[in-house]
Length: 515
Ligand SMILES: Cc1ncc(COP(=O)(O)O)c(C=O)c1O
Image (cartoon, rainbow, N blue to C red; front, side):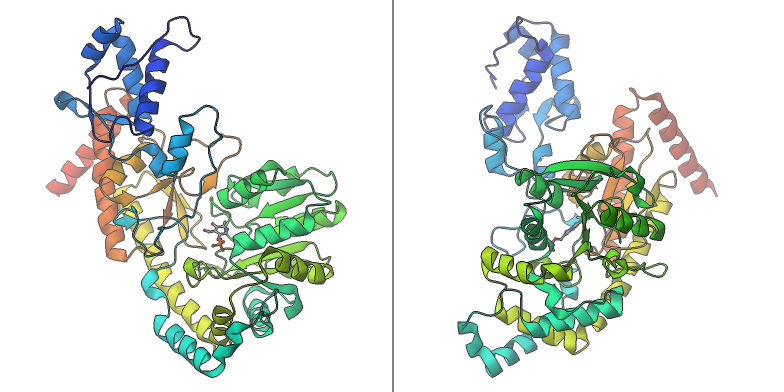
């Protein structure tokens, strides 16, 4: 294959970087097909009249970034799966990214299959974060309630209903919040939304005239950061540690918004300590600021008692609470709610009307019946047990196959964080190699998270366990162990520590056989 590269020794970029950029662009634009064999470094060097080492250098960068792979004597090939696919960049964006004039579109972190039929290029065993187990959805009872509702009051579908949501559902949610999250609110404060993302848009509209800055946890949920950035609001990162956002670091200037995930910080999984909860509430009051509490997976706490939500502790009407049924029931329902501070009741209802005149009537009726009958509580008890079993299996597999690694953020939610040591391959390397074996694991930036300071080392893997059956978890972890050993073998010549880790492992395996 002839690549027709055109290099210019007068440019600032060195020749090997020009090779990297041009070949990457040819791959991303589809001009070189996936899996294609590239010319050898010797042939390309001769064709370009440059030193062979320059080409080798360019190829090595492409290999490190996952665009091409070396298969020993067989040659160097374009990867079958590109890094851009792994971080969710669509084909359209790839086309755009080849042109300097077009801003790439933001990544859609939770985009699913276009047909809505689940048919996507997701790997066979997929640890994608924050997904409910599809087969745990209470399909039978949902169907029964749907049919019942259509038979008894189906004609209401022809009408508009309250843009803030059906009162029966708002009441049922207020009761659920009091029971399970310690939040005492009037039904009028509850606005039914199309999930938390819709709630976030709603809250921003309520505050946008007077609040021009948003503080976010760093690292943070992409869905929130990308939304704020798209609205042109200044986004300022505040670091997190094992107790959640370091509230001390919030500036004391006035009139800001702060976005937090206190139950299970996304992505680190930390729980905001009670002390910091009180501190952030005081800060909001003192600085005339508002807190957006995103409680996306707070229904799932496995160890220890739940901490009262920020909204439940708030005595000065400073917290907007975002709730969602995406994790507890299913993201395809697109149902959630926002609890606004009382002074915003009328404005929130009006704004929701401006946005979309409210949510579909049928699903709201069914969900309200589901809650009133106690089915939601029963469902939560059932899936909590299931997800806890899956979480425990995952942790024990990690301990068994990777004793030198550690996990965190597993008390709550649907994903945990796997920390890999420095002399392991990077998270991205492991992710890409695993993907070729049909296993989906996710580095920080591919797992719907963003590090605004770019300061996190590539040694964190996010593992969503809720939708993966226990046997698949065991199978995947075994394959991952082989995968990581292969990577260690391939790169051991470059990193002496890796060689010694592999020797140790071989030695350990040997001694196990001998016992
Ligand atoms: C931090 C965070 N917030 C919110 C959501 C859910 O958004 P939605 O309710 O719009 O589905 C997710 C989804 O995974 C999330 O990770």
